[in-house]
Each structure stands twice: as C-alpha cells, then as structure tokens.
Length: 396
Image 1 (cartoon, rainbow, N blue to C red):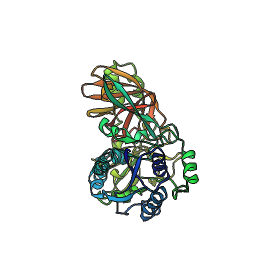
Image 2 (tube, rainbow, N blue to C red):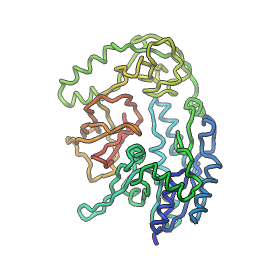
Image 3 (cartoon, rainbow, N blue to C red):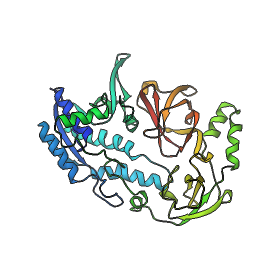
Image 4 (tube, one colour):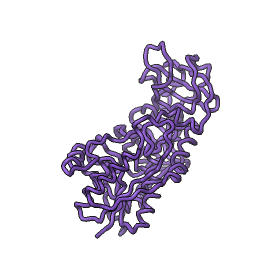
C-alpha cells in the first residue's frame, strides 16, 4: 500500500483530498503545518489559528488517519516572509503564495514526508498532474484544474519535475460545489468552513501595517499623471519598429518625474503601494477613482492616474531576466532566437491571455495580443500551452 502524507489545513479542500485518497486505497497520514505565529497586521478573524488545528484534527479523526502538527515557521519566515519584505522594499510586487508552494509545501514539507517514508505528498490544490513518457523518460505535466473558477495551477508555476514527481492533487478533476457536497455527505468538520484569504499561512493582512514590522515609514508625495502624458502616445510608434526594438520598448515600464504631473496628496512610504492599487490612497476630489501607476522607492514618490482605464496602467509586453526563467517542463525550453505562441497570465484568476514568447540572450520577452493592465515587477508570469503550465518567471 502506497503511503501519502497530506497537508491538512482545516479547510474543506484538503479535507476532501484526504478522504478521496483513503477511498482510493492509500495509507494516508495528515500533517498540519504551523508556519506563522505573529498576528501584527493580520485582519481579525482571517488568520490561521487554533480553530484550524482543531478542525483538521477532527477531520483526521473522522477519517481514521494519523495526525500530527509540524512547526515550519522559522523556514517560512526566512524563505517566504523575508523575501516579501525585501521585494516590497525594492518597490516590487511579490507573490508569497507561489514562494510558499515552492519553498515550503513542496520542499520542507516534502522532505518531512519523505522522513516518514511517504511515497507521495498531497494537497488540496485545484490542478492536475499527468505522467507521460518521452524518449524513454517519465515526464510530469502540470495541468489546470477542471474547475475554471478555482484553477490554482498558477500558484504552482515554480515547481520542478522532482517536486511534481512526488505530488498528488486529488481534487483537481472536481468542481468546488462537488467538493463541498462530498464534505457534507461525509460529515467532515470543514464542510461549511469559508475559504482562506490573503497571504498563504498568514491570512488577510492590512499590508502597510504588516510591512511596518520591518519597513520604516517615510513621508512622500502622491503625484497624479494626466492621461495625455507624452510617453503614452509613443506606444503607437513602437508598433512599426523592428521586432527586437519593439520588444524592448514595449516591455519597459513607464518612467515618471515629479514635473510630469502635480502633487495631490501625501503617503507614508512608496514601498507600501503596488501598481494597480486603488484603495488606501486617500486622494479625493477626482472625477474617477485613482489607481497607482508607478512607485519610485529612490525618490519616494507614488504616481497615480485617474480611472481604471488610464493608459498608464496598460503595457503590451513584459521582460523576464534569463536567470529568473523557470521551466516546469525543461524539455520544452525555448531556445535562444526562437519564439512560442502561448497563453500567459500575470496573476491568479486572470483569464489566460494570448501572447508570443520570445527567447533572447538576456531573457524572455512576452508580447501580448492585447495590452495588459497592471503589469508589475516582482509578479510571476505563468506560461501555458493549452491547459498545461510549462514555465514561469519573475517580471523585471
């Protein structure tokens, strides 16, 4: 009998994953991961707590499977939270959930499972894994979940073949309402538990308060940029440039100076803001809601634009440095000088966007058919061929 260690969070998804594994004849063991203790900046009622442990324990008891808790908080702080602070300090927008999966769930947790002589680890992610044989070698495909509304493959965009080899995703072929139904039918304590929100294992946070644990406040100016800013009109001129020049120009973020707009407010630190952010700006008297267009951590200026369709929010291309490119499928690596028609998403829940991916000596350029809203440095761009995620990279 194959042994599977499942990450049991107290949520309905991992609970049903454990149930299905047992139904399939696996020797199932459950581990609850304790990855965070500090509640500073965490919105009340949204963070993992003793209640989650209790629910997970009740589910394990109901299923008749061994249960234990393991504290990975030291590793989580070093590998995920410290990374977050460093990225925000640089004015970038990290995705801690992607890092949590790469560094904790499918690394530290996987190692712990192997210590327990497990054959596999399982999670409640809405994605699928398929094994194929190519040139006599087994290759693992990471596929989108069947439930388009819950597909979580994006969060696993940094996994390796070695990590996928040991992974099982029991609910990847099931839609969320059915998962809830199974939990209710089996009388699992998590059946009606709300889905978790916010940062993986931390919860929903008030970002400035959370970041102020390590990042200092620093007063600066909020400057509004008009919709007719000269750089926006240049985008049409880039369309007729030779391909290489076009890719470079269209992937470059807009650069602003204070004299390009006018001051309309104050802030407590540019590193507390992200591109595309609407809430928390404290700027009134405008016809349309303001959105963050850019942040400059060197001058400590935050640049905003009026309206969700402000041209400063849109770009046609992005760039990923060569050393930031990761292939889930190394056998499908794009060679220098080659390109690939693919689908791309730059954030969770974003519909897949048609694009062409170009591999150059310095890295990857992704040129979209339609200009994309809110491209931000530090985000992960995930590359798909149909429903398979083949690679990803951190946007420069």
